[in-house]
Each structure stands twice: as structure tokens, then as C-alpha cells.
Length: 273
Length: 301
Image 1 (spheres, rainbow over the protein chains, first blue to last red):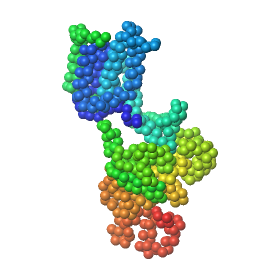
Image 2 (cartoon, each protein chain N blue to C red):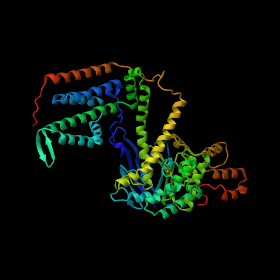
Image 3 (cartoon, each protein chain N blue to C red):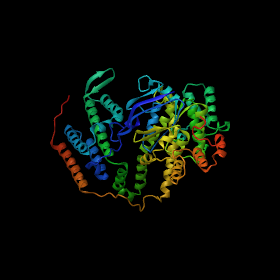
Image 4 (tube, rainbow over the protein chains, first blue to last red):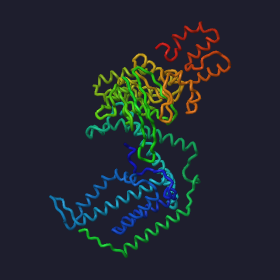
């Protein structure tokens, strides 16, 4: 059940995208997301579609797998779209009781749907192709300049990587405890809301106990290996930009320039309504 | 009760990058009253297999019949099955959640729909079976030692009065005393309550001492399914799949190579002792003692 959630999981592979420097991928994801919200035209979305298609193809991650990741956020998206659809003031197109759909509402809703879908796909490509460790490595190095302002970048990155590392462990643990309690006749899947919440106690108590036990063990293990924070700590695999990373930066720049050019010079007239 | 498994295969994470065939065409029958040991290297599919016995895992292909009924069919009550086949997970103490030992042991019987008094009665009986007296009832399970916690967890399963008890590495992480106590409890349950026991382990010595049938798994397939004496004649093959024969079998083999006339298919300590004493010509004097004290696996079944 829990294994069905693909969003945010690493998908092992050896494509060019997998091998890119995590800083490049972080930057790329940021550029992509900003472009989605800064340039909201049909032509911009077409270009974004093209870009995402190219990245997905080179990453060799099955499209089905990526789309599966959209499932858990589908409800959230639906709510956003509905709110936009019904609550945007403007020219009324359709009216039913107190609800009215406006032309602007439809436009906003479509925009929102496209943006959110691409936002999730874009960021899930980042997590699909980057191991949590290299992701935090990228963040730590990429945000290293914040050290000047006394931001504990290393500590934040370490906490993040530990948190990320523990997600699959705790998910496994949840699965195991659920099974163990089901073997004792526990029922997590039926009954009303109150019964279901009550049924969570035999799951949550052992889960908390084990999370604390693991945290304690980890802290001890880190200390016994001489961990004392970020100062003077070296990396086993220091991040180094290679030619492919430079190429990726150039591709990003080209993408941004194209976006800007599209905004000013290409106008696809859209008159849905 | 009898469980018959036919051509069972199970694939983890089908359709993802992590797809893995855990069980490959397994067929076996567990008869009522047996004491079965399942051994195999880490990742051989032991745990996956036993979770099919109470319907926690759904077979990818193949069928499982419990007393003649296919549990994979629509409408089979998995919950009833779970009360009949008690499954004790690895490190079962990690599933404890209640504030007192008695309450935790009551969890199973209460899920069966019993009233508090009946549930508590069954819980108390189960606690006696694993050697926990009244003084433990109101204690917090989190204050107990590892071995005691494990007994609480096993009692939690026994309180449901299962006909079959399946245990996944019940002795993992226990000291030798705790290990012997847990295995002793299992032997008593098997003999006195006539519960069918399926014991998963990778310790050959545990399995050889207690089980009267051994199933060896390797890479999701059944390698051997026979009585201990026969299984442990394949020492070389067992070593190739990362297992070993019981230590005493090795000693007997070495003795035989040195020219002593002893059987090298011996798998338990008392048997070995009798053999050696016989060979030394003192067998008659000690034979009587082996009957009441250190008896081997099935000597008095």
C-alpha cells in the first residue's frame, strides 16, 4: 500500500540526467518552476512541455511511473482548480444556484492545472534522478555562501539528509507494524472515522517508540565516529562540475532566453471564449 | 488444521524498478501437529513465505488451501484465518503499544470480539504458557527486559488460541538462556497443547533440536523438505547456499574420519552423546539417564 506512492522516491538509473551535478538539477528545477509562473502563455507552456519531454526521455524514467506520482496530489489539484473555477469574479458564462463560472475563472483554472501538474512533474524528476544524499550535498554546497550570514547550512543539510534517509525506513517500519497488528486481528481499513483514528494507536505508539530508538542509536553512532558538525569536514565525493554540467547550464540559459523571446515576440491569439 | 500450498510465486514491487521475485513455485503441505523448521539464508524468502500462511501477503500466482478452502478466493475471511494461524513477527516486542502487559496481551482476543473478562482469561492463560506470572500483569511492557518483552509479544499471539503458531526468528537477539526458554515454551506448546508450530530460523542448531521436519529455502525455491537427519547429510550443498549443518554433526563427521564408528547423520546433542558413549563401551550405564533428562528431538513423542 505505502509502496504505491512513487512521488519523491529515487528511481535508480544511469542516464545523463542521473549523472548531472545535483546543483545543476536544483538550479534547473528552480528555473523551470519560475518560468512556469512568470510566463503564463500558451506558447510558454508549449515550450515547457517540449523541455520536460526532452528531460523525461533522456532520463529514461517510464512516463507511467512519473504520472503515478501525480496521484496522491490529484485531490489537492482538483480542489485548487474548483476554487479557481467558481470563485474568480468576472464575466459570467454559466450560473447554477449560487455558483457561477466566469470566463476568467476557466482561464485561471486551466492555468493552475497546467502549472501544478508541471510543477510536480518537474520537481519529481529531480527526486527521481537524484539520491537524497547527493540532493542535500548539492544544497549544502550550493547554499554554502549563506555561511557568511551565520546560517548553519551544514547542520540544516545534515538534518535534511537524515530526515530523507529515514522516510523509507519509517515507511518499512510502518508496514511491518501494520502487518504485525493485523496478525493480531487489528483492522485499519474499515469502520467510521473515530474507529479508524482509534485503530491507529497500535500503529503509532510502536512507530514513535522505534523512531526515538533509532534516533538515539544514530546519535550515538555519529558521536562514536567523531562527528562534531560541519567545520573542517571533508567529503568523500566532492562535487565537481563536468562538461555535461556546463552543457546543462547552457541549455537552461537557452530555455530562459527562448521564454523571454516568446513573451515579447510571439503572440498566439487564444480566444477560447 | 492443514495448509496446502500449490505452485506459489510472489513478486515484490511488480512493475517498478525494484521488482524482485521472492518466491518461485513453492509447493508444500503443513499437516496438523507438525513441528516444522524453515531455514534459509537472508533474503531466501522465508519471511515472505510465512506471511502467506495467514493471508498478509497475497500470492502473485498459485493457490493456498487451508483445510481445503482456497484463501485466495473472493469472500474468504482473512481475519478468521489470522486468528487461526498466529504469526509472530521478527522482533515482535516492537509491536507492543499498551500501558500494561495484560492490556497488550488482550489486544488479540478483544479483536476477536471477546468481552473483557473472557479476553483477560485467555490473556492470563497465554501469559502462563510463556512463563509470565501475575506480578507482570500490571507492569508497563516498556520497563521489561528484551527477553520478557518478547514473551509478552508471543503471549499476545497465543491469547488468540491459534491452531497453528508461526514464528519468524523468535530467538534473534536473545542470549542463550532467553533462547532456550523461548524454544522450550514452543516445545511445550507443541507437545501439551498440540499446536502446529512453524519455526523460521537461520540457526541450524535451534531447528535441528526442535523440529521434526526441515524445509530449506534458497533464492525463493525449496531446496530440501525432509526430516533433519536426511537434510543435514547434504552438508556441502547447505554450505554452498550460505547455511551449515548443526555443530554436533560436524563433530561426528570429524570423529568418523578419525576412525570412530559413529553415525555422522546425528543432528542433536543427546543423540551424539549416546553414540559416543556407546562407542566408548559405556552406553548401557548412561542410556537410562537420557530418557528423563536431556532428551533429543522426537525421542518421546
